[in-house]
Every structure is written in structure tokens, then in C-alpha cells.
Amino acid sequence: MKRTLFLATLFAACATAPIAPQPPPSPEAAALGLERGEVRGARDAMVTIVEFGDFQCPFTRRADATLRALLARHPDELRLVWRSLPLAFHTNAAAAAEAALAAGAQGKFWEMHDLLLEHQQELSSGSYVEWARLLGLDVERFQADLASHRYRPRVAADEADAKLLGATGTPTFFVDGRRVLGAQPIETFEKAVTPELGRAALLLRQGVRASALYATELALNQRELTQQEATAVRAPSRRAGAEAMNVALGDGYARGPADAKVTIVEFSDYQCPFCARVEPTVARLLAAHPRDVRLVWRDDPLPFHANAEGAAEAALAAGAQGKYWEMHDRLFQGQRELGPESYARWATELGLDAAAFQADLASHRYRERVRRDAAYAASIGAEGVPTFFVDGRRVVGAEPFDVFETVVEEEVAHAEALLRRGTPPRELYEALVAANVLAHPRLPARPTAGTADSGERLQVVIGDAPTRGPASAPVTLVEFAEFQCPFCGRVEPTLRRLRALYGDQIRLVWKNQPLPFHPNALPAAQAAVAAGLQGRFWEMHDRMFDHQQDLGEASYRAWAVELGLDLARFDRDRASPEVEATIERDEAEGKALGAGGTPTFFVNGRLLLGAQPIERFEALIDEELGGRRAAQR
Image 1 (tube, rainbow, N blue to C red):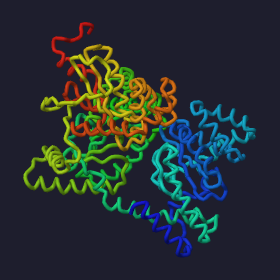
Image 2 (cartoon, one colour):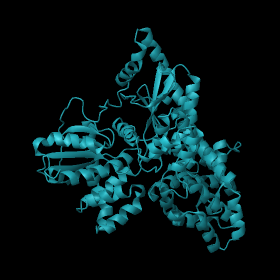
Image 3 (cartoon, rainbow, N blue to C red):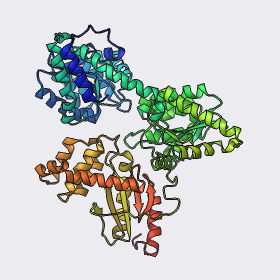
Image 4 (cartoon, rainbow, N blue to C red):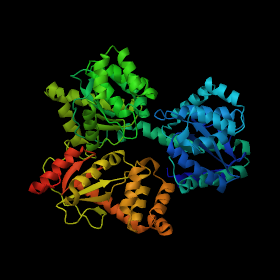
């Protein structure tokens, strides 16, 4: 049911019929209760926004200014409820949440909240005490509360409610129970708030008490939301396993029998909280199918997880001594403690040769192997973690057990049919993957080595796209990419190095390919194209990649000022049909060329997929240059 139809029906019902007594709140409604959080705003608000945030998260900080502006626009109509969701890879977030609650016990929650977000780079126990003193708190009591972790259970309760509600990242908002994800612009919040204000006014006119308004709104909203969620659960195969890719096993470590009927390849990251969350699901899956399923792990450490690559190397170093999976499990169990000291301690606990283990880590013996896996992941469209391929069929994210089970059961039946028809067990995985790629064509098959298998040279139109390097350069490298993609960020130093190595012999061309699941990708593309209309595309491009974690409205405008742009024109251009058409044209060109993921490169028309090592680029460029290789090289 469309939102507009739903609201029209609801308003009509409210206008013609009394409101029946509401049943006891559902667990989801209870998880959004006012009594479970700290409240800011009107006491008898018509609309309630519950925020699950993290004091170390830059997006939570960015959203805070938007929320303050929103509350200022609606001082008598809105209230904000804060709930803590400290992410595992933010090492100071949980303690900061406890500090805010300890201040709240003395009536200064929001004052501490504001200081924590304002001074996000200074989070530490010393800072919390200094700010407590600044706020006039009883410092001795405050310190005692922190030392005893008095408020840790409350933070844990917030985390449990977030899990129940499906809030896996920060910030996540619920506007009268309707989810809004991320640090959205104020217009997005207004679109969510406006219909809720209209309905609240009707409910009040029908006699609903102000004190009961929020509970009534939650119950009414949940009717539609429950129906939508139930539909999604009933048909998991529509969103999981509906696309297939030819995925190589590589030299990844495997769990489960070598002759398993079904093979799951997981691309994952030891610092990722979602990867940790799905570990019990994977273990349950293997236990449910002890003879039929094997798991192959391949590393895909994200660049903004500072400990992920080192943890992957630690697992491989332990694997060299026969204890890969034991170290793998320790890394997830101690996800908040990842670091060299922990790896050394766990190696000792596992009975490893500590000197050999430390030597492997110090020499980064396995770093190239980890990076090869990550580059391969990018080349096959595994652009987030965790990403699974069940006999080649893609399942993205920490999905529930039932979602995996549905795909696995289908593949077990498929495998048994192939075996009955005489497929040798040693050829089963390749046969299953090949069949799935044909049966699930929505994800186009792409070459696994990073370059086109056929050597085909495609015609890529440069047009008026932004370029770096002379038009006469013998090699043109066209990149289809976007500004929020971590792999596009990862390859940027490689491209800068290539420009330094080859000088005027190469030309770089940028084409926009914002992916729909990256909320900042399209606004960033609009800002970059708008800057280009004033001759500053590459300067804006560089700022975005240098500060990829700060993408957002405030940053775009600040960078525009730094670059000396006409700010009024910049704002107009970002919203203009001209900029929209430029981005849509790039996307259409990329789709026609098979550039379904980012980054995708065409080197004189020859396909190169993903954030490949510089050697892969050099080999292809040198082939194109032939005897004209740069003298300085």
C-alpha cells in the first residue's frame, strides 16, 4: 500500500469513527517507549523521534545539528528521545554513552550529550571528568558511577532494543515508529514529520488524550509496517540469492566437508559488527547441515576499519600453524580488543610458536594475500561486508537464519539432482555455479581476473566528462565510481601514483555511478558536478576522497567556500536539471558498458574491475604504451 493511500484512508477513518482502545503495546512499540530514553523537546509533543546514536559516530554528530534545527522549527510539536547504540568498532562509544547517563542521573544528560558530540575527537575518561566539572556535577559521584559501570546495563538494554527494531547502524531514527536511516538533510525529516503532524491533529480532535497520543500513533503505524515486514519475510528469495556470480574459492580456509553439496563463500571483515552478528547464524547453518554445507572464508577488510587488515593477517599467521579457525573465533569474540597485543596474547593461549607468529605479523607476510582477496571481492560486486555467495548466489548482510536456510535448501536439492544425473562430486561446485549464473542473470557475469576475458575493447564516450591529463595522451583511463564507496576511496592513492609515474602519457576521466545503497553518493555527485560547472570539479573530488567519512550537506558547502565558489550558484546547480541529467547520463553509459559496481575502469576501452593493485594497472597501461613507456620510469 502506498504511503499516500494509507494516510488518506487513515485520516478518513479518524474523521468518521471513534478511536478504539489500543491493545497492549507490541515488543517493538515497547522498545520505542519514552521511558527507555532521554527526552528533549515539547512535553506534550504531537510527534516523537527516537534516535539510536553513537557519540563517536561522525554521522550522529552531523545529524545532531539537523535535529536541533528541526526542533527549533517545531518547538511545540516535536520531541527527541535518545537511545545509545555504541558500535563495536568505535572504541570510545560505550564509555561515552555511560558518561552521558551518569551526567543524566544528576540532571545534565543533554548538556553532556552536546559536549560529547561537539568534542568527538577528544573522548576519554579524563575529558568526561573535565566536562562533569564544567557542568557543575558532583564529580566524585560521577566518577564512582563510571568506575562501577553503573549504567552499562542500560546501554546494553538500548542495544537489545535496537537489535529488536533492526537498527544496525547509527544514526537510526524512528518517527512515530517509522524508520529514517542516516544523517539525512532536514527536508527528509520534514517529509517524515509532516504527515505525522497531520494525523496527530486529527487524533486529538477525535478525543485522544495528549498523553496517549504517541502510543496510539505507534499502534496505527505498526499496522502497515508489520504487513510490509511480513511480506519481506515470506519471500526471502526475492532479496537473497536472486543474483549470481562466478566466484572462485581462491586459497581461502574452509569449514565443513570438502565434498559438501553446497559451498558458501563469505567475504568478511573481523572489525565489522555485522560480520560478528552473522557468525552465530553461520555456525547454526553448518550445524544444521553437517554433511551438506561448507564455508570458505575470504578477507575483505574495509579501509575505514583500522584493525581489520591486521586481524586478517593474524588469522592467516595462525593458520600457517594449523590454528586458523581458532584464531578466527578469538578475533570475533574479542572484537572490541583487536590489536597487536591481543593477537600475541591469543596466539599464546592457542599454543602457537609465538616467535614465528610475531615474525609473520612484523613482516606482513600475509598482507598481499589479504589485499588480493579484497581486490577480488570488489571485482565480483562484493561491495560491503559481509557478502555471501551460496553456490554463486549472492546474499548480502547479516540476514536471519531463515533467509540463508531457504537458499541453502534450494541448493541442496539442486546439487542432489546434478549428482543423480552423474555430475562427479569434485566438479559439483563449478557445475552449480555455472547453472546459477545462467538461472539468475540479474547480476551480469564478470571476469574474475580483473580484466575482460575476451580482450574486447569497448567504445567509451568521453564527452564533456571531467578529465585529468592531456587529450593527446596515448592511454585514457575512464573510471565509473562514486564518492561514498570504500573501494573507490581505496583505489584513489593508486590513481594518484599512476599520474606521478606516467605523467602526460595517461589521461584520467571521471564518470558518476552513485550506488543506491550509499545515501551520500548521489548528493556528493551532485556537489562535485556543480563544482565542475565553476571549474573546480577535481578540487572538490579530492576533498571528498580525502574526507570520505565527512560527506554531507555541511561539508559540501564548507568545501565550496574553501574553493572560492559562488555559493548561491553552487546550491542552485546541485538541484538543477542540468546536473541531474549529467549524472543520469553517466549512469546509463555505465550500465550499457556493464559497469554495475564501483569502481569500474576502462583502459583504452579494456575493462578493469575493482580497486586492483597498482601492478595490475601498470601491466595494462604498459601493454597499451608498448615501446613508448615513460622514460622517467
